[in-house]
Length: 147
Image (spheres, rainbow, N blue to C red):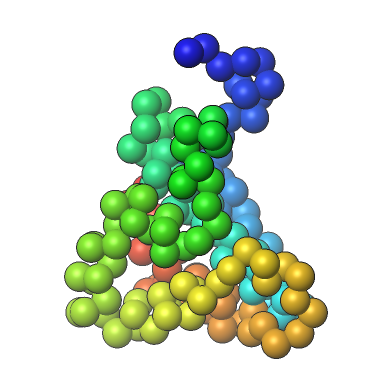
């Protein structure tokens, strides 16, 4: 089936998701430095979502992310644990966190993220989230090994 012009214009590729992940990580860092905890928390989680979607896109034809949400609804999820499974990285993460306590701690922070945190006005620790994202044993650095 040939994609429509609208689908082609909005189709995201692996490279698009990689760029988005890195951009959102930088934005999250800037917000954490400016003490905007809610914004930093949301964008750090969104960076992980985009990074995992880059891993999923790597497995598809020409590294495109599936454009048809009706047929590929699961990959349009915002659930990081589900995206980790769809990227075929759950077993690798389980193996790696057994030998890397800091990665385990970082994943513990990151996996609590939910898309609806964007509606929260307090109670989110963006500084911890950004640290878990960007540290040398951070979740984004680990995902980059696989994207």
